[in-house]
Length: 170
Image 1 (cartoon, one colour):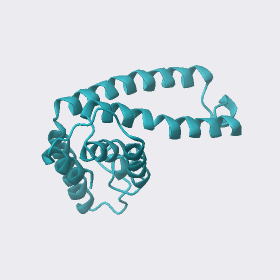
Image 2 (tube, helix red, strand yellow):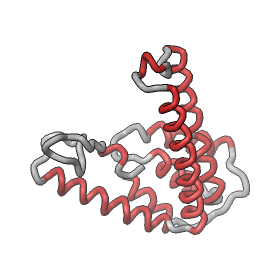
Image 3 (cartoon, one colour):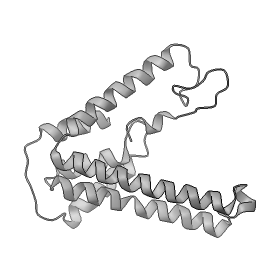
């Protein structure tokens, strides 16, 4: 579905609005809500929807990445209230949590900047093709005898490298 959204957004006539309106923000938010369905990328859905609504690509990409902060911070707050970040509850040392947080933050910033540049240059069709190829690879891997669609490109003996289909087009 994300492949189709990006393809349609790529070939749509550009109508560039200067600002994202409240109505557009609401519709983009609905696209984010729909992205909980399998096969939909949250960022892909929101960026493609914003572009189809006629918003500037760079503005939509930035807005999309800002939109994800609310659910992430909300989940973190709920975990914090339950004590889920404590070393005892998680079984992970405080230093390991801090190092993991910093690594995730730095790699996330790099990935966001990279994706915003891709969107700004209008190269969404390449992301759609990449997603399609990745989905095809996952499908054929699944057809080779996988019994559970939640595993992909893993060590079938030890089941150690588990990657779910939900991240394929994310």
